[in-house]
Image 1 (cartoon, rainbow over the protein chains, first blue to last red):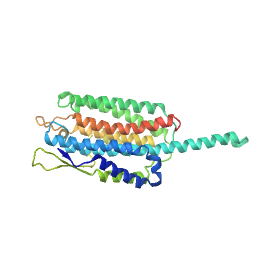
Image 2 (image 1 turned 90 degrees about the horizontal axis):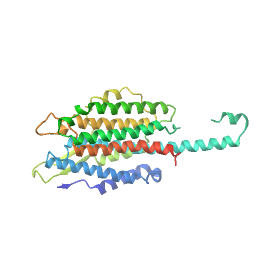
Image 3 (image 1 turned 180 degrees about the vertical axis):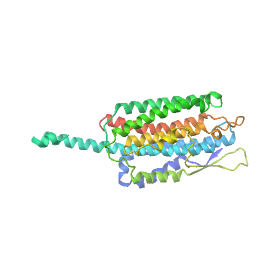
Image 4 (image 1 turned 90 degrees about the vertical axis):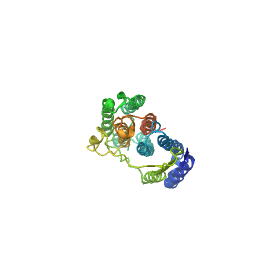
Amino acid sequence: MSMALNVDDLVQEMLAAAETAFGSEWKQVKAFVPTEFKKMGLQLADIADNVAKFEADPNDGYPPATGKILLQMQQRALEATLTAVTALTLVSIQNAIDAVFEVLKDGVGGILKELIP
Amino acid sequence: VISPYDVDLDRGIQDFKTKLSQVVSDAASKANTPDGTFDAYRKSYSDLEIGLVMLRDRAFILEAKDVNCSVPAVVKEVLAKFQKASAVMTVTTSAPPNAAPAVVAATDPAPVSPMAIGRQKNLPVAVGCMTRLIDNIALQLTSIETIHARPELCANKDQPALTCMRPAAAAGALAAANDSLDAAQIVQVYKNQGGE
């Protein structure tokens, strides 16, 4: 049995695409994105492997139609991971805002201090 | 900008993850038996959906004043390239020798889920990140139900009408669903740790 899907090649292709797409933001996400892509590449190879097993023996693996759904699920998982990146960025922004307001609270008096949440 | 850590969401997501794993693993262990059919697990899926809807409602209320957690254009670009890279996977097999290669295309599964699909249409549009992540998890659950509910995906030669969760499919589906759940949990952990 041989597979056309090469995990390393796929991961490298995804990484190259991501690095180009993220541009200057790449530094912020490169710590974990390669790990996620590698994990995903292995899952994609697993899907291909199981479809091949089914083709050889219908009692093994799963049908191509199941593979389609699992591919969709993998793409959705990647979307969730990247959405989490957006969320973490927003948390960092929120913390920075809170820190600034704390400084303001300590540094100002009178009516302004009462207005700062 | 973004709502603070919420212990109920954190625990709820962990609880959902545990229950989902139990349901799918149990169904896989009973594949190709009457006890492993989709109908046998209808109540379990319904309970999972109810739990998820409650989490979604909570997140939606908590995030009412959050900024829009829109996925940046750059992320969409990465996803589009990912889709292109995995759009067609050609698998060649040694047996049967003259069989055409199986082609797996990354397309949306048809919505056959008996429970999840209808309700999602009526939900208010997600704004906050957690609500979006929970919607993502709901879609993963829908896909799991689809795999379990379709007889042709069980592909039992002797009982073509039987539905089941093949063990290999269960493993792949849980891996993807857990990635989505982990993403939601990471956000909660990050919030709980003060963004550090």
